[in-house]
Structure formats: C-alpha cells, structure tokens
Image: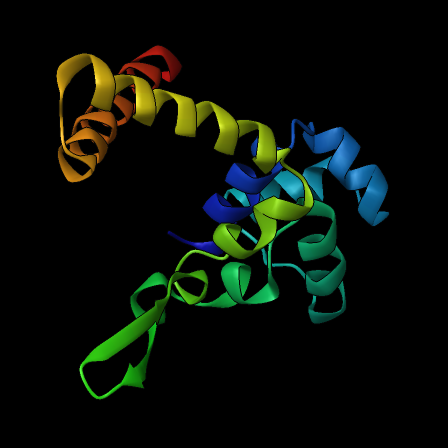
Length: 145
C-alpha cells in the first residue's frame, strides 16, 4: 500500500474528512487530496504531525509494506516470540483508543458459550470464531464497495 492509500485509510478509520485533516495540519484540502492520490507527498516536517493526528506511526506511513517484517526474538532454546506490532502498528496503538477491556469481556463470554454449547475445544472454538469474523469482514467489504 502506498503512502497516499495509508493516509486515506487512517483518516477514514478515525472518521475525519479531508477538510478536517487539512485544518488540523494547517494545509489545504487540495493538499490532502494530492497526498491521498499519491500526486504529492507530505513534507518531512508534516509526517510526524500527520502520524500523530491519524493515530498511526511514522513507520506505518513511510515504510514500504514489503520491507515491513514481524520481529522475531528467541525467548528460550525452543521458543520464539513474535512482535506483530512491527508489521501491524495498530496492534500496539489500539489500546490507547479502544475500550479493549469491554471487547475482551465480550470475546471471553463468546468463547465460553461456544465451548459449553457445542462442546468444542478451545482451539476449535477459536478457529470457528476466526472463520465467523472473517465472513463478517468479507460482508463488510462488499457493503463498502
């Protein structure tokens, strides 16, 4: 995804119009439009403020997706830990804006209910819920088109 697409996506994720973003950054709406169309790029001095307003990292905006990789570190001789926030910065940022405890409680109840109702194992329950979430995602994508 190019920087313009990332700017547009992040702006829409926080429900800002191009006019509102332009006002916050002290630029014109046309400037925002050019950035989002990849016809122009934000000045270096604007990137930090842009990332702050859009609630994303500068890395997210500037890095080529192909160069982004998850950071893997060895925890013990046979165990590795993957830091997915390097690949998906939103995973490190959402806890500052989303009432994650509320969603955690909802998901926990869903897991317990499915395990009890259908006698599924924890792993099978998670797989089913992932599949259902993916189907809902596909439906939402169709709605947006």
